[in-house]
Length: 270
Image: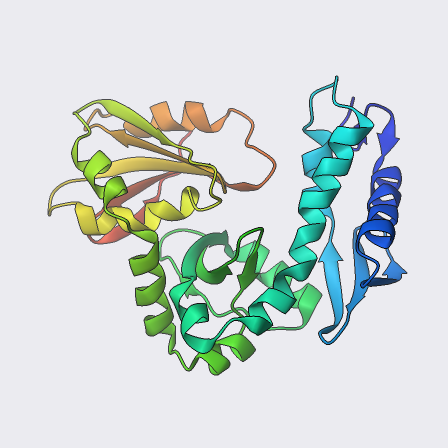
């Protein structure tokens, strides 16, 4: 099967099944417009909302061949719960919103695409010497809500305040301890499945001493690979790992050197 089909189901069929699921199981929402890659859905009291389907397509297409129609329904159910995020966000108090801010490591092209599609500005901090940046989200039970400039204004936070709160909320100390326990020439794969694995790369500089460095890969939102090595070929070693196909949410498949001073993408010939 190609990336556009899952067991004979076209993306159009997947989209139509999801629309039908929403109409049956979440009748409070009205599907106003159906497009090849997104839907326009009206949510009572929240107005119209664009729902982009790329992640849904990827989730269905990544299912095992023996997955059933009921399995697809479960995926539709989980995906559709994100429609309630606006209502949940609206019901959260000011302090609660602040308490759930976390960082999201993003590719700048992804930010530009989101801004073009939504017409909203996404505050972010570019990571020098890489094509990546730090965005911010409100972490909700079944989804996240990206912080746009409107929400940032409501929160009353400057960009640096957003960053400091987000890093504080992501860092529970366990990651720093694991990083400190890494032995020379060792490899660590961080994959907790909480959707913030790649973003934990942002914690690394604070745990490194002057003169220390590691090489990381963030091929996917849900994967962070860390190599602690001074070997001359360490970047080529990580580049070979980067050739392995990323998951359903690809991020950046180029080795990055991290020191206490920040990040540096390293292109290799291999």
